[in-house]
Image (tube, rainbow, N blue to C red):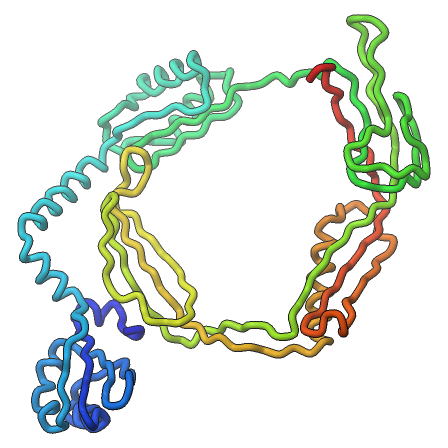
Length: 395
């Protein structure tokens, strides 16, 4: 049942179906005998579904006879029933205990040492540095000092720009990045448009102008070309210019007059999943909710050589939802649609841009009677010149 918690599961409980002419009398008499009943649900005329503890079920005999009802067990849930099933498979339990003991022992030592991101010569030097520090396979994990390893490798290998050391499970990973000398572009640099715009200001500083004030440009269009050197070996002339333009960006949103609201009722259901490698064992009930949202929490008990979880306990909590339909006025829908459209449009405008004008279009009620559609257009003035390296011909 939805209200069963971890304590109820540990004690064990049964879900029974009560059938009779007067099931209400059965409930009242059970309460008089101090028998705990929970999650009572009517299934139809003379039939109900009830959750009760194992002890409570054993005490129901007199109540059932006095009320003229009969009980049918629908499901047995809880640790007691799980243990009873497992005890019938003793060798399986023994194997699982031995497996977990071996897993725990093997997880306390270092199995794998990995070097990521380094070239073969650097990788060999990193492994040699680890050996000189006494870091090798089959050593105990608690003796691995990641900070000391990182400092020693950084000090001894000056050709590396960055070193990171991580111990995860039984795997020690050393990540390295070599120093890279920036490449000087061979070809000249052009100035291209960073957005579709109308040029309002154009000041040429170097290069050959392709456009002028008042022209309309599209994103990526070349506005100023750089010059290649007149002969081989001469340095190219990179384009430089100050280009301002008017840019239009739009955002649109539609809000229906009838919206669905999902609220939590306060009823929850917890389910636990014990994951052993590729095997899963589910404990508890998922809850019989028509609508719900859920949260998941996981705890890793053992980690494999590849860094993945070997033994993991997952708790899944589901929250029952009540779905309601809410009717909005056109003013409320317009406000929500306008705010959403404005946010969508503003997210496209750079922080340094200067907004000139904001315009909006609202849908006609006759054409769109059950929703409000708003379109926001923002006109801004901004720098639209962006440098771009000219690729060699044929690329």
